[in-house]
Length: 515
Image 1 (cartoon, rainbow, N blue to C red):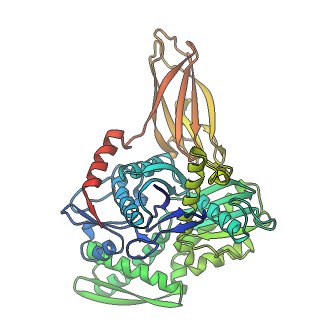
Image 2 (cartoon, rainbow, N blue to C red):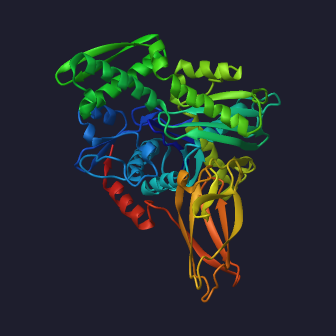
Image 3 (cartoon, rainbow, N blue to C red):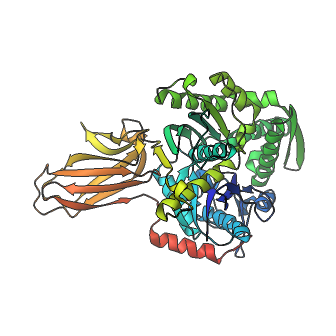
């Protein structure tokens, strides 16, 4: 049985495993490619086609193809019907995962366990949705790991291998503080990591789950669509098929502009065709505010860690969108350092996930062969503060318990008081975010503390304990301080899947013929 690391990306996915020498290796799909596009074509006849063929079909039948599913994770629905049916993002992601596993199994044998990567800035709801997708796909999810952390972990092992050292050990002159700038197709993260001998410690995280290469594509789409409207008086954005073809052309142009100074984008709509020339200079002007957002986020991480650029030894670039020349120039201007492009930017996250899978499994099932992995210490931090909604002077406020960038796992207890006489249960509304006002935060879910003793007077103390695990998942416990008994506390996540829902969706995925 093999264990793999899976980079479940917004636009592309990759799978890796540790070979017999302990080296992280990316597994090609059945087409011989190490990257699989995150696209699903549902034929309507019980068949799902995943990858490049699905993208090709999207130009002709966009209503039957799902893309950018990752951006919808944590929401109750994908956002539009696919092949005439409404889907949850978890189910569509599970179809992709199943395809990745089937292709990998053809080369390395049966796969049952996996680590899946998530953006560092994913909140608890999105993290749970990702783990649920893995369950629907029939996988035993060992853990989830933040994408920039996975990249830094892979970098560490690459350094160890290059110097012929044991896994996790670093050369004396290796960088100690590493900044990972991860700009993918749909999300953006920056993570500051401190590397030591068999010790891997995250110092700070910032990010944007609504910023990625797709937003650069969209600027080109908007520009060309407006030029087309000016010329012909009709808007290609009004037609789904015209937009699918324009988006594909815009993405190709973006990739071309990473290599040369000029490209063209073709738009076909309403029986008319227009080819628009685009220069790299124009593209960078259209998207300069997007790049500025990544710059501000990068600066924020350094500030939160109370460090300067002199303290950062290495700047790693991760994610396919870092191929855009403007990203490297911006980082060089900001930091005074040349970004490190030595990593396979589109594969390194999956490789890091494979390394983490090896570490987790070694701790669970220690053997002589895996002892070196089991000794590696990984320390992460929470990307969002965790708090409880309270009322102050009638205003709903965020009472922070575990503040942002706290080392994980972490747990904090606080005493709250019943609001009524003979109260049998207490509602605790969990929040993630930095704002003081509850409405400005991300709702995690509601936790009902039940089983309180009868005849409790108003103002009776109930101690609430909130825990954030090492992988960012949240748990809650409660203690009735009057009786000294633990009270039942279970988080009810609005729109989240229950075990019965997961089983139902898994049955549907198993019924599919996946190619």
